[in-house]
Length: 451
Image (cartoon, rainbow, N blue to C red):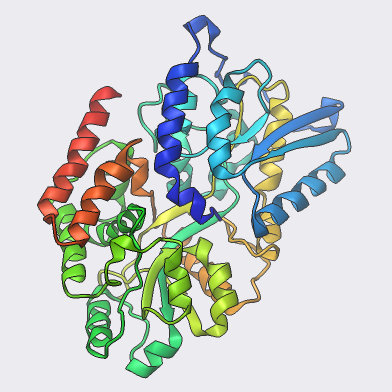
C-alpha cells in the first residue's frame, strides 16, 4: 500500500518531474529510446543465461519492504541464473531521480513508474517505457486484473491520454479510500455502520447531537478534501463519469452532479460535521486523533489500516463508503500501488517481464497478505487481524464489481493546488460550490489545451 507520503506529495513530485522533463528531454527524435513492442517474446528465463536485473522500487516501509524482499529472494531461488540488483528509494526520492535514470545510457530494467500525466504519461511520450501488450498475451495479465485497474496503468503512445491505449505496468498492491468507524462510539449512539448515504446523514446528525465530532478530518495539505470530495462525487455521478473526467475523455467539472457533490461537502462543513478548523489540521494527525477518540467516522485510505489496527485493536472497523441506494454496488477511489514497468532500453526485457509476472502472481498476493499488506488481487492466504479482514473483504467486493475510480489528483499535474485550494475555501465557507468547480474546470481546460 502506498504510504501517506505518496498521496501527500503527488503535487510536489508532479511539478518536479515536469520540470525535469523540460530540462532533460532528448534533443531530437533520433535520441529517443525505442518504445516499440517486441516482435517476439520468450517466457523461458533459464535460457536467458546469466542476467543481472536492475530493479528500482519504492518499497521501503514495513510490509511493503518485507514483501518485495521475500519475492526477490524467491525469484532468484527459482531462477539461479538471475541476480536482482535492487535500488530502493522513498516515493519522493524515486520521483526526483527516475527521469534522469530513464534518459541515461544505462537505465534500470524494471522500475515503479507512478501513474498519471506528470509521470507515466511523460515517460511514455518520450519513449522511455516498453508497451506490455505482447507480454500481457504471454502471461494473461488482462485476464487476472479488472479493467478499471488496467486502465490506471494504460497510456496512449503520445502520452496525451491516460486510462486507455497500451498497458505500461502491472501492480502488486491495492488500496481503497473507505470509511473507518469507532465501534465503541457507534454502540453508545445506538447506530450501525451505514449502508446508504441517507443512513449516513442520519448518523452524522445523531453524532453531532450527542456532542461528538461526526467525521475526523484534517485538510492542511489540501489533498484530503479532494479525496473526501471524490467519494461524494463517486456517489453522485457514478464510476464511468468519474473515469472519463479524470482520464480526459469526457465531461466537465462544472456538470451538475459534480457541483452537487461539492455542495454536499460544503453542507457538512457548515453543519459542523467535520473537525473544527480542519484546514489547519495535518493529514498525518487525522488517524492519530481518531485513534485517540476524536470522531465517530473517518474517511481514509487502507494504508492507514495497519497502524489503526495496532492502536485501536478491535475497536475500529472499516467499510466501503455507503451506497446511493440499498443493495446498489459501490464505487470509490483507490486502485493499485505504483506499477512495475519495463524500461525501453532494457537488454533483458523478457526476464524483466517474467520478474513482473512473478511478483504479481497469485502466489505473490499471498506473500503480500503474510507481510501485512493489501494485495491487489484475491489471495488464498487470509489476514489474521480483524481490521485487515474487513479491509480485505471490502477490496474483494470492490474488485468484483469493478468499482475503483482513479484519484482525482491524476487529472492534471497542477490539480492538487488548482482544485485543492478552492476546496479549502469551500470547507471554510469562503467559496461556493460553483466557484470551486469552476476553478477545477479552468485548470482542467488549460491542461487539455496543452496536450
